[in-house]
Each structure stands twice: as structure tokens, then as C-alpha cells.
Length: 90
Image (cartoon, rainbow, N blue to C red; front, side):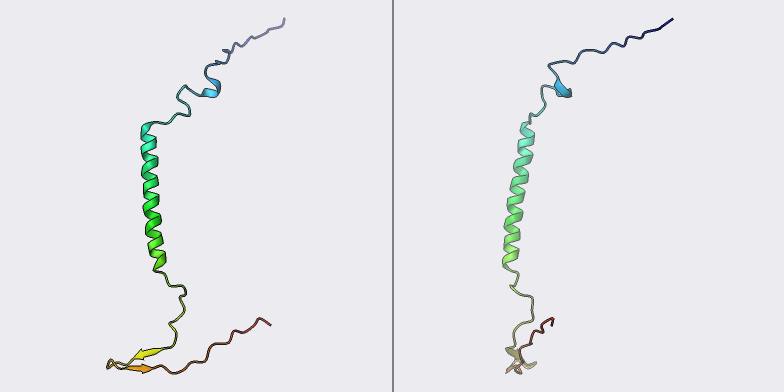
């Protein structure tokens, strides 16, 4: 005696390929509004960053030897400093 089981599956729906409904891939006006708000925020952040970067000095080394103010307010010339020699790795 042999038993055979038949399992029935519904045929795939051609109107709904891969579980995508009719609204798949569409955006709403709210999405456009959010996108525009993000764009405006990025523009303001970039402007602010460029203003701050313009204030950054070209080098963070100490100020060059020049005139130093004495405690009483008179300016005195600084002692001459020899330029530092860079040592090669060899």
C-alpha cells in the first residue's frame, strides 16, 4: 500500500511581484519636506564651518620672535633666537 500526499500552493500573483504593493517606491510630500529641511541644515552647517575654518591659523607653532611687552607696558626687543636645525634621520 502506497500513500501519496498532494500539497497545494497558491499560484504567484502577477500583480504583486516580490511582495511589493502598488505604493512601493513612491514618496510622499512629507518625504520631500524632510529632504529639503536636511538640505537647508547642511547648507547652514557648511557656512558655519567655513567661517570657523577661516579663523584657524595656518600654523599652530609659537609666535615668531619679535617684540615682547614688559610688565610696565614698554616694549622691549626680544633676544635673537637661532633657527632650529632639522635633524635628518641618518
